[in-house]
Image 1 (cartoon, one colour):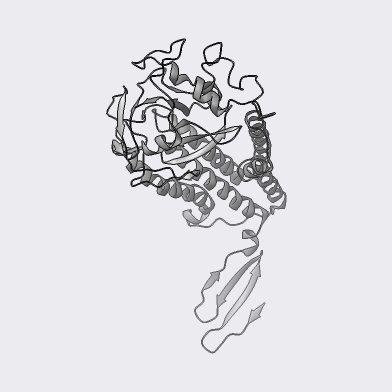
Image 2 (image 1 turned 60 degrees about the vertical axis):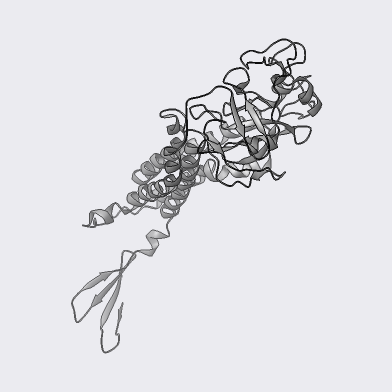
Length: 383
């Protein structure tokens, strides 16, 4: 197809193999415009969706790496695995679309099923949970199908390779480069903050004087523990003395199936583990000692620290980020930076099945009383 232009420019437009070629009559130059059909293909759509999934996992991984995983050497690498696995699968699919497509389907469906089974066993499934996991797990199966379709639609006619290296590998550069730049950008602020994190190595009993109160926090040991549920803390003093068999409440009914029969606020006040801690905070006794107690939500928030001193936080009575003079961090004297614990239970229940806990970064949340995580624990206090 030919077309006559203005007096200043004459050119031909040819369509060859789906590409538009612009050829000037006067300057004897050809300009090859992008093949729009290629960029609107199922393979291009699959590549774009893969890039979105990798970026989502990168945002999650970098955030959690600094928030939860930065307490032991190489522990943080675990949080980068999902993005790394998605990246590897995408690179395989770009090189071998049919193989990569099937791998994405198998892994996507398998991971989604495993995630839903795990969530169901812990807290039960909800519609929001089912939908929230689709973009980053089950959605991989849909992307895999698109790659398989693109492999079947591929033209058998070989296309001449572009002489420019970067142009031949542009898809790979984008898939690797964008998540890498995103991750590095997100890591700057927390990396700087971690470099200045205070850890004086003193994990004994510590006095923290905040605007609300002057409290002594229990030393490392039985009064400062991790991986304990709110039910176990509240029911420690109910016979038989101890944590064993009390994660699901006094009658074993507080679970993902019923969420009833959990420990009550009254039981927390009467039987919490801190009441059984000896004066030195080094041993749990079989009878109430009443030297120590569980801290309230307000006391936890006001005792949050930055640069080794109170961060000026106050609980506003609601969940979410709390108002603070400075952003608190995981530092002594309240926290142990080399410990996985980043959340502390408070003595306050929110309702019959949920209780409050506080994060080192200055937020208050609710969680089910029967849930236990290695990153959540408790620390006793006294005036």
